[in-house]
Image (cartoon, helix red, strand yellow):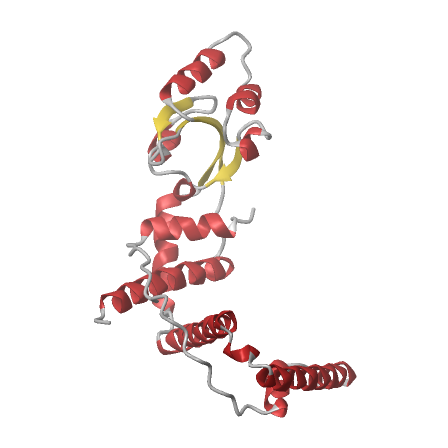
Length: 262
């Protein structure tokens, strides 16, 4: 069974130390953009970099050259009409300039700071140790407050009560509620820390909660089943682990830059 990328990334982020993102770019007044001396040929080469040589690429290059020539004609005319001097145009040009620089910065940052292989193996070892070889099939019902949670519990205590039916009618999580509250199979590290240990200790059919989450919502979890399951191999998890590491590194770098004097 494949692990979902988003949940694996989240599991790694929970286990690792985290730094909050900070805004580091001020909304400065946009300066007038300087004219570029980048030729059409250079632009075409840039836009077709890595393309496989052949008729399709040749046709694409020809189409780009035509489009860029038309763009250049528009720019010349816009300069005559002083459109480039308009404030909204200057702001959009400044936004595009910043986005290009920031994208290039991160490309260079990760080139200078490659993720070591030991980071992957250590993270994989932690995930394996935390999860063991067991998964849990869960369902949940989410409500807004404790009074609503008590109403759910009263419904679940009725003879022949159906957790799925109650989830469909009372859960405010409409996406899972439509499926009877089904959360699918989860590893321990993919379960919220408030209930993870209780789920591991529970038996199929047990209810966990009501539990109040950090956002104020209250949820009731049902353990539907558990099963033995081997963790996927490290190579299959590497893309998700890399994404998580990059997110952590970006937050750390943004925190560092945010502390620098302006």
